[in-house]
Length: 348
Image (tube, rainbow, N blue to C red; front, side):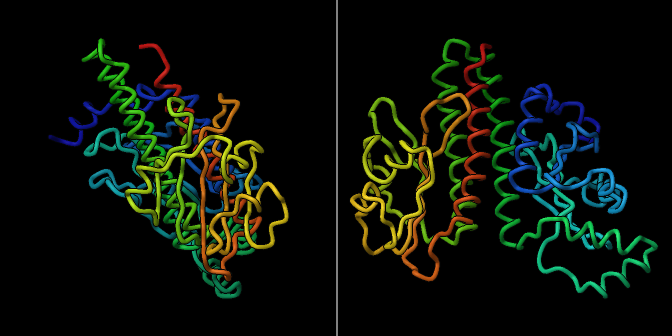
């Protein structure tokens, strides 16, 4: 099949996900992660308005950093990437292209992430000399570089994985649910529930992976509320046995998860905790620090899940900065899960 034939058979993103919903997701990602985001088609067509993080001037960023020139190199028409790819420009900023798969073999669009600063900043004098030789305004470009949020290599890798998981999960869910509803209308409800569960678990696993990475946690879990059992059940885990994952049931108001859910706030728990509601529920004295955070959806008055992180290393206690990073990740996950559930509930 030629590239032209493949493009002709490829559905458009707007046919699968409502553009307004996609724009909301992209805008929220940019705000929470502090990165610039665009969504483009494989043919480089802009599919949404660019999303800029707070405090970054879009016009000067595009002009000074020559945003857009990276497209041909990052997404060569003759050899479009199927995995996340990146490049660093002579001006010292990095861009990444995150594929959004409508099927395992077919990319429907790309998140373009950047400009980014990844790794340690370049020496100022060396930077100004090098950029001046390129004919650019080195002083203005340096000021703009300083305005960009720096990322570690491991941190940006995890965040790009989260972007891929969210984007691909939403698109594949909507695409498959629509096809199944058309092919099997009588069974659309049960089939859709299975599809929702599959993609929900993908998102929760991605959330846990990134949360443990940015907080340097030694393990953790994500529980969702099961209405039938009136209890929290583990849906994603790191560092727990399969038996614990399968057998664990926790009543909604019990334990530290119950306190976090009732307060709708993140708990930082260690041996310095003084809150009686927290200390009387501290069962594992071997842990140096725990972070327990509720997961809330826009349309739900009560938290639908709880993220728990733990470490036994007293040199790696969780901090308010960790709590804020986790809060932002939970906001993103809540938006993504709300999109999944909205698509599931929409009449077909």
